[in-house]
Image (cartoon, rainbow over all chains, first blue to last red; front, side):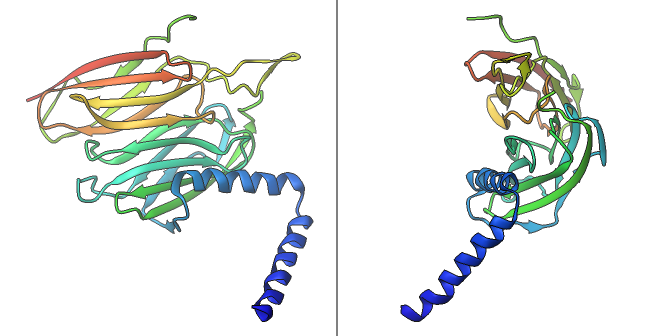
Length: 149
Length: 109
């Protein structure tokens, strides 16, 4: 055991030091985001691809930002999207909404309008009925923040 | 309790062909107050719709769990496909348990 402790402790110390170099607010925000993601999909490792995420590059009004999420899936009983989760990485609370889908839908597409506090990345996770998770992201510039104003 | 929820607005075709994919749009007027905003020195109390459930003949087709990132006057669009004439029911629920409901019949034929 002893010889494995050394590197682990050094790695932990290194991680603490690298966190210390970041502004405190950024670390807190990353933790909140990670917790929000874990709450929805657990420890699943998402793969890229299979999701079309349409959002404006620049949103004049952060209070009403239209987004479209379309997951490539037949939406049959055998193979369908079970859930779509939307996260705003730099909102005060990152978990925007979750959609539970069923094969009664013609396709795995949802359009809605969300609030963005500031310029940020939005992250979409899609859970398939077999438990696999896909992800997509988009950067959105926000002219007027939509959370606190 | 306080005032009832607003009457929702639904855009849905009255008639479709069997198996045809069609669009459904829903909107309900609601401030979706996050509790984070201030009115001068006072915080504006949190007032959120937290759920939209869409049922086809009583079976859940879509359930939206809304948190405070959803815009005021929540708007949702999605796509359905039917093989027989069906009743589509839309139910919004707020955090205090109030609900607003609408039902649309879509004829297949």
